[in-house]
Length: 353
Image (tube, rainbow, N blue to C red; front, side, top):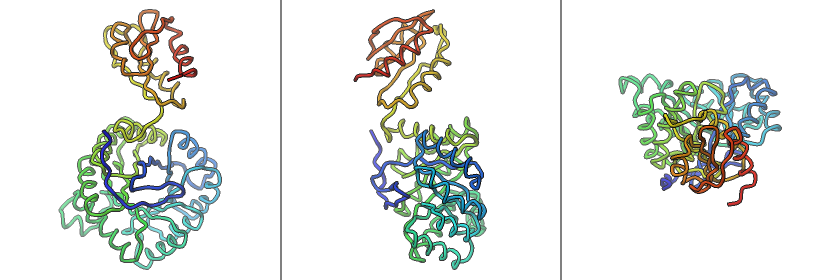
């Protein structure tokens, strides 16, 4: 059963709506030099193909802010400018077409500088994400709690939210991230009770594709399953396309995203007589871009395969030198082992439910 969502305000990022009853949005962030327009556009297009719905780019200098204008001409999804410290870069990013900006007001500077950014955001009618990480807590917060805590992260975030509200700006999204999974979960539980702005969820500095995927899946999964969160990013040290793949899989596993082919496969055992690991990976690649909403099973044993894969719409099971094609748990034909993948491909290309 899909978890009930917390009701939040709604913001618009380009043509994507975030919050309220809108679907949870999957985001990523480029790791190219933003001013390298060709490389940045190429990476964003790969992210688009993987299913990315909003992309964030670092804006560390004037050149990167100016590049936004040309980048946006060549991509299809909204672009968020990520700014630290220099309020002038936030203004430049907005003027060059950013659909949203991400700032930490605590490192932007005086209220006058923050107000200048707000006025520009109002002029261009774009939202601001107020982001606070466990590594960016102010000295007075750390002194109050003695260390980094979920309470401190949320208190810091709410100080920023109240500041923005006092400056008459409420077109906001909020994020409270930590690299500690349990702390991050608690921080999201607290912030969801403290405000009704849309929440961007993620485990910051999660790690490599291996460890980061595990930490992000656990943390983001628990948070989303409580009905908290309106947009997510899986933060990985690696190809950002992997972030999108994992993000979409998290949503599908929780019943929050439908569509596309789901591949299930057995974990292999002593009965397995084919290279199931290779076959399962080949099937996952095969179905990646097929416009079907079905479940495909890849089983390593013709003895238990049909039964174990009966919940799938279609599947394959391998034996010694041969395999079978299965539909709804029933064997429909046998093929040679080396023909299994192609036989599955033909079935999918000619799929009729």
